[in-house]
Amino acid sequence: MHEYGLFSFDSKDEFLEKSMQFWNPDKTQFWQDSGVDLVIDRREGYLLWDMNGRRLIDVHLNGGTYNLGHRNPEVLSSVRDAMGHFDMGNHHFPALARTALAEKLVATAPPSLTKVAYASGGGEAIDIALKSARHATQRRKIVSIVKAYHGHTGLALATGDDRFSKLFLSDQDSEFPHVPFNDLDAMEQALRGRDVAAVIMETIPATYGFPLPDPGYLEGVKSLCEKYGSLYIADEVQTGLMRTGELWGITKHGVEPDILVTGKGISGGVYPIACVLLSDKAGDWLEVDGFGHISTFGGAELGCFAALKTLEITTRPEVRSMVHYCADLVGSVLRQVQQNHPNWFTGIRQNGVIFGLEFNHPEGAKFVMRELYELGVWAIFSTLDPRVLQYKPGILMTPDLTEELLDRTALAIERAEQSVGSNSWKAA
Image (tube, helix red, strand yellow):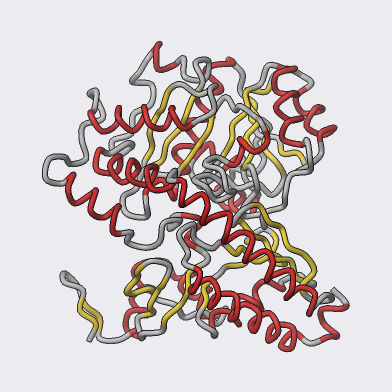
């Protein structure tokens, strides 16, 4: 019997049957078919325990939600303390915690950003960003990249790959053109008509497998936006919060965006919240009609406390140093592993502790994912490029756990190469 207070399950099998019946049949079955029967039970730091007690090191982090680890004790303590005085708050009125967090966010951001609007999750935050750009420019078109992913809500869905948008008939909207990543000529062609409200870009496109921007590419996109009167939206939901070794990945490129979106990790993994940082121009609607966007749970005051503590932890000098140490160590060891398997493990995309590991098979990352899972590590393949494994160590990873992770990773890559077989992947 597995007891969880207000509910219980006799066994993992019983739970999976009920998940199929009452929750999401396709997603539940997908993971069973993929050889990943994970049902997360206990979680602590960068460790997960399956319902049956198996321990795994988490380097998926749910897209960076758990940058600070699962159930980070400082974030938990901050929210518990806040519950003695605060609750969700009321979105209609000026809010103490919401204002305090906005001030802290603006202080950390590029100078171009002066106001903050709130959402309960990343997709809603992207919608706010796109609506803000449309209001500021009085234009409708939004340009994103091919194989983009910015969430599953209304406007956000249309900016992404048709893997997600087609299901809900949002894949052929002429107001949301897509251009290839790292192609400045295509970007200029899309902007030349001066009818584009904004370009939205993940600083490193996560669901596409973390392809790195070419030198000068993001800077060039920003210049084109300025030339043609479009706004630049930096989606930092997965690349922000010190994952690149800087608080915001876009600042490593010297780009001052008109809008910056943060989510997932800003919650500390404890309380849902996402934030949209706006320039004076992009945030003009806040002056004109502050009721223009209403979100009952956006910027919930308890969530603001989680975010305030997350920001405080993330910006500590020792955390920055640890990220750089971990990035150097992991990158160095992975390059050694790659040298041992050059025909199978073909590339490493790295910026800080963001890694995309490339394999010489159309679905190579799925094979490595399964081997990692068997060896007690949870990482995930890139949905829009399954050759590439998303590999994201947490920013507070200890040296001992990092060493354990790397040992298991090296063995998983070796086993995956053997399991695929030389004939199948050499022909890929």
